[in-house]
Length: 286
Image (cartoon, rainbow, N blue to C red; front, side):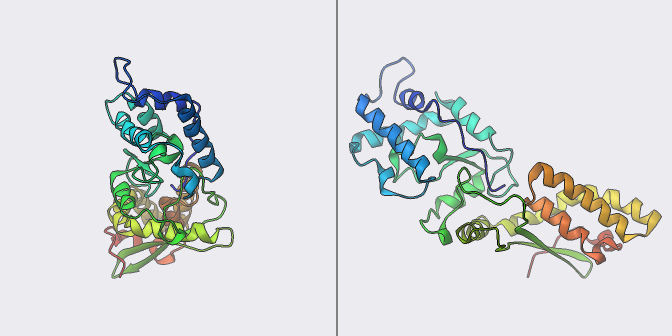
């Protein structure tokens, strides 16, 4: 969740050529060498700007017809089209959607919208793997300020050594109540904090995690019950949860919701002291 390695852009010119060529080799739209150079320099500028909004990325020296051809060429990135392998490689870079860490990343989002930045329609650094739900939410909220923007998963540098995703847990009438929040810790840049808070809210992360939490915790209840029945020791439950948290920290990262949840549960004495027995069935916050 939150970030992915920058994709390989070595074949950018080949991608453009393929998108603008029919399967039989006939050109859909013929680019001049100068236009190729403009596109590649626009890509380079994108790298310099870390994908941030800027007029330089509009490639205004290209004709409207050329920019529209690049925009339309993205159709070849769809499933079963000529650039489907390109699409698959980008999607496979994410084990799960980096916005929610719940669903598989099965769509590509244009971080800077294709409707405006047409020359970037095929550029891999502007193509972000997402699940359908998150992509749909982002599509209607492509802002230009940290308070209304999503993270750029390839460029924004997220702290990995400090926990900023906090799980709030409590037992209410025996049922587990869970909510997540982004904490504005010292090592987290203010702009990143605003973007992550907006992004989490926009994709309805807390609501969507209710069902996932139940599914995720079920195997732990199966392990905790016999252990507690024999020992009646809350510290044994705590240690079990912390051991699992350590594994998720190493595989999913310190700020994955699963890691944060296990950490919070391990430090909830009521839950560890037998409260887990009736807690299955997470209730909504508020």
